[in-house]
Image (cartoon, rainbow, N blue to C red; front, side):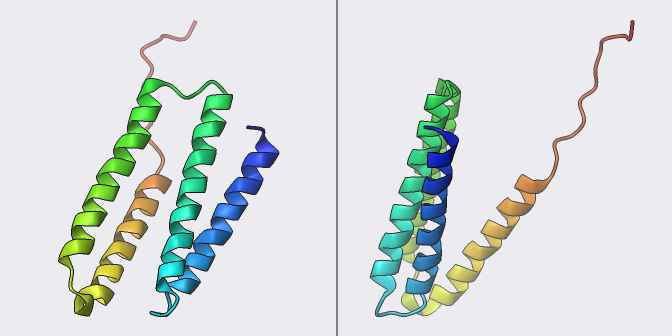
Length: 121
């Protein structure tokens, strides 16, 4: 997948995420908002996989990490969604938003510097 097509696909998925948030603001449109969010995430994931595959960077480790993340996150989300009562939904959303913020902070921190054992010539 070329960079222009990938950028357009990511832009569309971003718009779908925004529409999902808008749809989730009302009980009447929440199903449609949830569907838009799922389509946006599927499009973003497919774009990532196709971009990696097209560039020859999709190896077994990368694929396992992506599948593992989707499986673990989906399983935890499904269990939590089944156990939480509707009256506790605002607290659940706040907790999930905190996790999103934590992941953004962890993702933005630089890796520790590496030490080189090679001696200068």
